[in-house]
Structure formats: structure tokens, C-alpha cells
Image 1: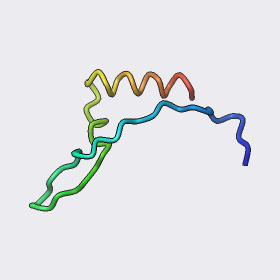
Image 2 (image 1 turned 30 degrees about the horizontal axis):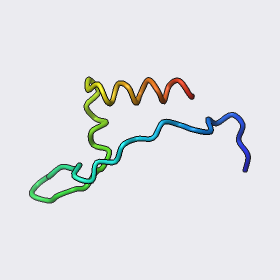
Image 3 (image 1 turned 45 degrees about the vertical axis):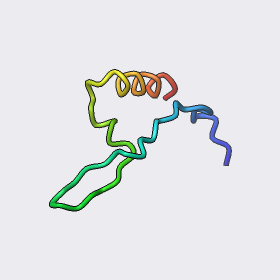
Image 4 (image 1 turned 60 degrees about the vertical axis):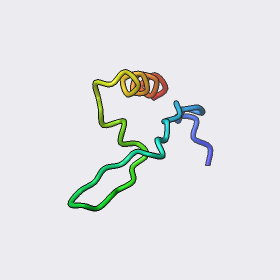
Length: 54
């Protein structure tokens, strides 16, 4: 389906293969957990790039 209202090239989000967290002794992999740090420069830059195309 062709959707001209959607951006053709949204900014790529870095996948962190070591990302994740442990909860109650169990490991959960989350390659995008870095995005939860909203004050981080990388997250802020990605958010600004995403907002520029939406």
C-alpha cells in the first residue's frame, strides 16, 4: 500500500544488543531500553529527528 502521508526515511533507532534489564532475577532483552533515558543526548537527538519527519 502506498502511503504518501508517511515519511519515506524515518530515522533509524540504534539497537543495543546488550540492552535489557533484570526483574525478579529474570533477564529481559530490550535493544531499545536506551530510549527510556529521556534526558540522554542520543535519545533527544533521535526524538528530534523523528519529530522532524512526522
